[in-house]
Image (cartoon, rainbow, N blue to C red):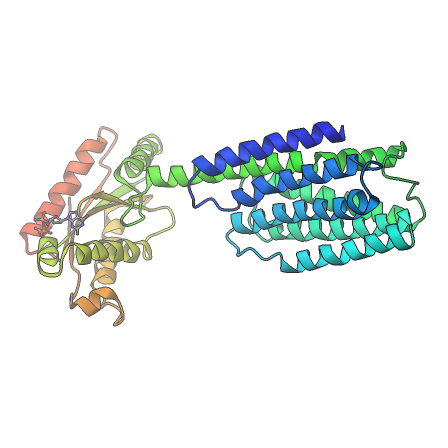
Length: 379
Ligand SMILES: Nc1nc2c(ncn2[C@@H]2O[C@H](COP(=O)(O)OP(=O)(O)OP(=O)(O)O)[C@@H](O)[C@H]2O)c(=O)[nH]1
């Protein structure tokens, strides 16, 4: 059982290694999660050589290596969750545990004390590791699995510690009692189970990152045209079905070409980013903002009539026209006030189509441009 679990842990290290090579660099911690099962497997080999190699290696070093393997998992989780790697105190603790284990194996042999010290250390390590996850929202199955495994491991180790204190340590690691067997199975499977949870978490993260890239505009971070249209189509169908209002705002920066020409394309990009950021704040929670193309944005306002949407549009115009922060790149470049023209359109009855509604918003925008810009026009 122990040997098989060690081999499976090694296979998981191969999986982690190949994931690390092919996954984006933004997914951190995979290096530590590769080293961790290898380290745990190395400890298994050392435990298995009991009687062949000196006790110093098969007891003291083996336990220290196992603890270090668990610390690598912890370090991987710290990095994966966006924290700096900070395991210095655990390294110091492993050395301290090693000294105590050495004392109670070479100087004053005592299996119960060794077991108590080791189970206490590993229970504390798993508890700290579980706590790290519990301070984050457990969004995906992989994270919940990892947290559950760590909590169970911490509890098993704590129970084992209590049993040792109550005088039920047994006589040795491979004693064939029920509790000892359960404990061995649990710890043999640690590397395998933690690695599986790590693989699931990394895969979840890649999916979320790719989903974001596929649905958001890289320059401004708002929804891209495809994702926005998927939303608008669904909302239009819902509005037709339920008879609830839906409005669209088509928004175009005024004389944007002049900004590019006068201040350069990079300043133009910065203006677009600033616009996207400013446009988000006054929008109702159900609204969605997306980049329609170039310097044009589209806002979908489910539940709002064209009259209510017009009020939102005026508010957006105000927010965009506010002066830039003195330290902002745009103020430094000397770009003045941002103005936009906005076309508003709402759903008109059961026979309306989305294309017709978009055409009305576009026509209203065109009218706003024709009538001098920096204004809102309704279809
Ligand atoms: N910097 C930057 N410029 C862009 C981007 N997309 C489109 N543009 C520029 O936006 C400008 C749009 O110009 P026009 O369509 O003539 O419109 P305008 O100058 O805003 O004038 P009006 O809309 O009539 O007020 C062009 O100069 C495009 O090169 C972008 O992603 N970044």
